[in-house]
Amino acid sequence: MNKKKIVIGGALAVLLGYAVSVYWSCEPDTFSPSKYAAQQATLNHQQPVIGYETTTTLIHINQLLLDKPGGFLTNDRLPPSVLMDNMPAWEAGVLTQVRDMVLILKDRISRSQNESRIDPDLKEAQPALNINSHSWNFPSAESQYQEAIDSLISYRDRLVETKNPSKKATFYARDDGLVAWLEVVQNRLGSISQDLGSSVGEAHLNVDHDQLAEGNGVLREIKVDNTKTPWLRIDNVFYESRGSTWALLLLMQSMRDDFKEVLEEAKAMVVMDQIIGELEATQETVWSPMILNGNGFGLIANHSLIMANYVSRAQAGTVDLINILEKR
Image 1 (cartoon, rainbow, N blue to C red):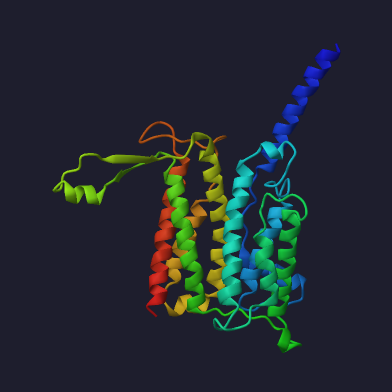
Image 2 (tube, helix red, strand yellow):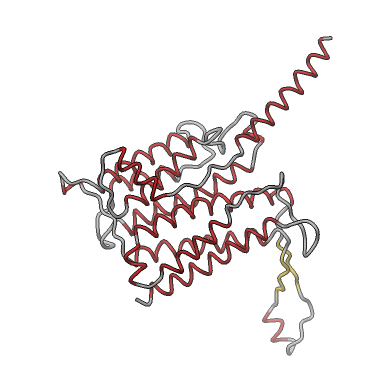
């Protein structure tokens, strides 16, 4: 009888753990950066200025990492989260975009020139975000991310400072700052696209040019390298890409609003909207219970290649946008 109870109890524990893991794997919904920034401005009795929306979006993205179902899971040491990999991969993708944005904000957008003083709040936020995401104590990743949030809130409050000009923070919506961020974005998107494309493997011919010259144009040996994502990592790569594009979509929408004047003067608003449209497509609901990895024109879809298609087009649009802005 006791043995039967143990078996039943174990089965129920497994089912409960599975149900919790499914709930904790639910990704946060996207939101409207402009509407959310307006709500925060009203709540805090502030008058939004250029840079307010982007900073508020950064703050909310970080807060969602901590407050979503299950909280921040990457550094957990207990089940069921220690057995989960999709959500931690999603979190890694989000963190990549947040770290890139804060770094550019600190080094470029908040400074009038390279010799200018670094904003003290951003100087605190940037290293706090760069803590190892697997750190669970002394200090925990969550505590450092909360410190980064507090620093970003302080920076945002100083953006709208009117009583004490010496404490006022700056956000320069210039084309050089936007280009600096877009160059980082297009490199990230290129890497994401390559990782997703490796789900089916790619054959590369390694040509030894010295051997080619010695052999009068004849190769005695051709080496073929196949780059393919291991089967057990395909879903990790997909969800990391999905997290990265989720955060990038929100940041791109925010930057579109804060750099509206620059984009309109360069007649580049249409290109920016196209990039945002491709990023929105990456966030469509995945109805399959698992990430499929079909080949060719078979019956089974390949979710990674579908995602790679949208990411590649977003990258191409980003390159076009950089070229337009650099020609001004």
